[in-house]
Length: 103
Image (cartoon, rainbow, N blue to C red; front, side):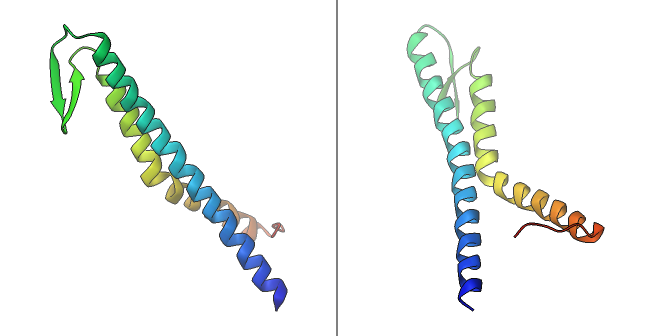
């Protein structure tokens, strides 16, 4: 009985760390792109600006930052569910083919 509790605790800990890692990766990309955008705006005060969702962007150079910020948020929101689905599919294929999986 105690062995099952230990196994469940290890499983929850591993999944929690994976979730935390995916969230930190996505939010890290988002905030780095946001800070780079702010630095770019400060370096080009003569450029024309555009406002998107209450954030200021330069018309010429803002596209890479918006794409990076979108990528970061997508990783943060969708990264773990996609990873969990992929891991489930791999596990199911192993189980159906008869190969043993490590626990």
